[in-house]
Image 1 (tube, helix red, strand yellow):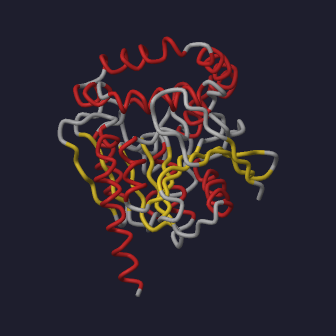
Image 2 (cartoon, one colour):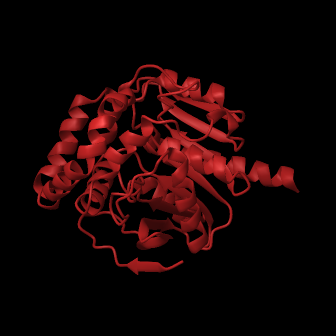
Length: 315
């Protein structure tokens, strides 16, 4: 597969990726990625939330990767950043694209972490490649909205109402948002501030930290200003059957969820962990939807311990 690399343009005071580019995944499509940490370390794919893009990786996680020999790779979903616009028929269809990226980057075994809307895609990859995914981490992940494994309530259920409209209007709306972001850097940071003020205390405190504001702003300007169709494509597939059963995911899954989450209810995390065969729920007291980002180094440490345990059992 063809691999294109490009230099990251440093717009704000935050570390740029070691390499950044896109990978051909067939049918004229490309998936964008950004790599941080150690090029020779264990690989961890970090899947952004909804909205988000490839640089939605905490600065603490980036430095942790450098210090502890971890190769942390953020991946754009189709329709944001350097990825070609495309609509999956179901969540499971993302897995072959991620595996192609892994193959192209010379990665055999790896971990996957997904925040919020990245959670379903994390589980899809774990389901598709249990021999390659050593451990999966989910931070406040979205649960199924339809079918026998569906969870009730929560903000994600709005996708059930908006999906029919977004089938038609999602791409045009994404283009308008992208156009606004391309010229709206002066208002992007105030917008993050407004979200923080409207959020519960946990998210408000996290977004008050300069390094997290810088990370979100960097991700928004490098991802969303090019194209912003991915969040609407996410909403469409969230409202459908995922294409696999959560209960069939055999990879070890560790789930972090704030008990004050105002986007994805804490009960959804409990529901999902009860469905998964090998899962643990890590409660984040007092934290809201973004709380897992503030625990990135603890989460990475824990997941690598699980990886070590799996390798020890296999010997």
